[in-house]
Length: 157
Image (cartoon, rainbow, N blue to C red; front, side):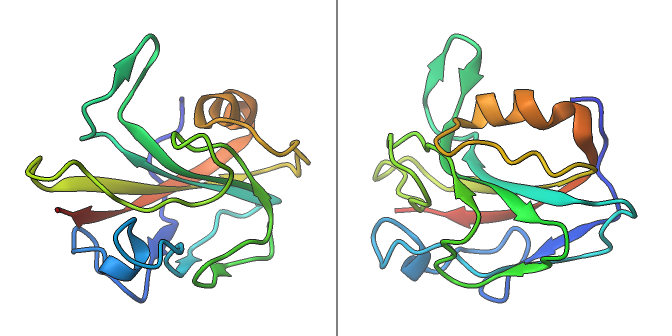
């Protein structure tokens, strides 16, 4: 992807950057998505996409690595936050082979995993169909990304 991190900031009220994700938002808890909010949106933003990816997961297959926990897109450009358990917008397929969010649940004894919540600002409303994988989404949005940034949370079992 040819876009560097932008001034856009992604935050959550329930964990700090590099902080522990509360159990409620994991596969050991209620498994609901954490609330998210963002600021410093690039001028010209028409829509957003949000993903959660665990690069520490011991999963490698051709052209991919890690584990995808959430793929959400077609978020309107005027939206600057998502509530806990967000179901609005369009959900893609995660690596549990389900639509929507499934939280952290690293293998026991595997150490701390880092969960990268990536927010992408797009200069176009794409109206993408439901059920895209992370890699399909990235391929479709890449030409329209005008800003991106991340929030990293940690979790260990």
